Image 1 (cartoon, rainbow, N blue to C red):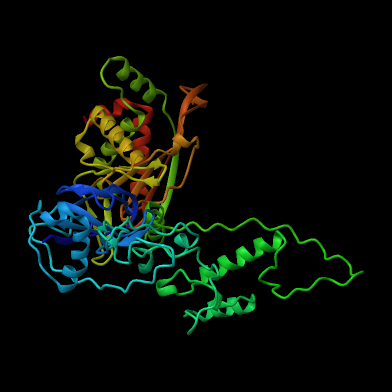
Image 2: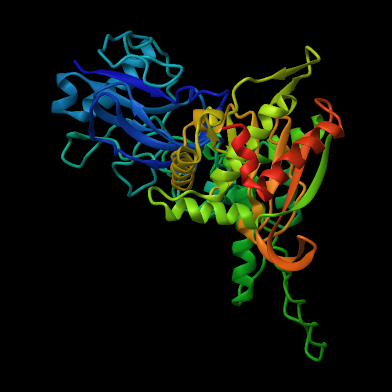
Length: 506
């Protein structure tokens, strides 16, 4: 007898409470091994491939690609045992019965693969089985709400189809609702009329009733996309758009269900005004949402101040060219600036800190974990170089390159995106000179670097064209006063203008 184990979305660490399904890596009926990745999810920190702690046959999947699931929500069920290998559908049936009875099947696994779950013993779980909705006439073999197998035409059971959200307008409108995670596709598009129904109209929201009444829609002639045929606001709006489109092609609109032809000789109605551009709403979730929350918290909690200075970077660029001409790995400008930052923090340790608001203490850190801003297709991320104060320019260059590539590929781990104590922001790559950076909460300071461009500059008493850069420094005024911040920025500028100053600390 096959044992069916339910695998739920695990705790991915760093206080994350939800994740969005980006891509399924397995189909229903596939055989998976222990620790095999089954789904790729995106959290507020990074994209992660989630491994399954059980080996067997996948009998059901929960959630379509693009669906956001909370931690603890079901991901897949896996049939483990000989019966699962011979007949995957039998495993699916066992998932409905065994899980409902709270059986505790023992299964071998790999131990704790991710934070929050282990595989030494499968935990007992109870699953609430929702009744199946009637299948429309002429449709056979559709998967039920729990993803269980449906009988085929020859009488033998077959594996359940992959659970996917209906390809309709309602998918985006109700994504993330429990009823959209594993139900079978509704017959027809939401809001499509299918004849009057007997009994009470399946509507809960009074707003939906009023919207339909004001636009002359008969709710008894509509099929809802919600659970058990519940008519949602999205269904009514869809029906109104469909009726409006039909009216533009010669049909009656929902707003004028009983319109009559205008009498002869009546003036023609004025032309309808041109439609206004559509308003687009972009949800603040994933990386974008995490950035918004952190920046808002920074500006709310941190009394920041900014100072800036122009520096002649000609000698720094010459020193870099000499290093690269000597052979070996190329040294980046960002690595030289990072080396300058670590030297400056050694002189001004007050700035390598954070504020504990509850204890009313400034927490100073001995190690410098240097974050750097990286723009990716998924948004702004801040990878962290661990123990940057112990690295030389060559090591810093290699680590910057590795983390930048991982950021663009979306493979950074939560550990590589957290724990920073100071941030370096090279916004000069965008072709701008200056900025007032927002501190990366809960850190106490950030150094911003603009583009390095030729500008007129007084050098040794004469006007010359030099490579000039603007440096801006934003700091938490609670950890220090302007004298400390100004001393830090002036030391950085001196090292940029005369790199030999660094020799004193090497």
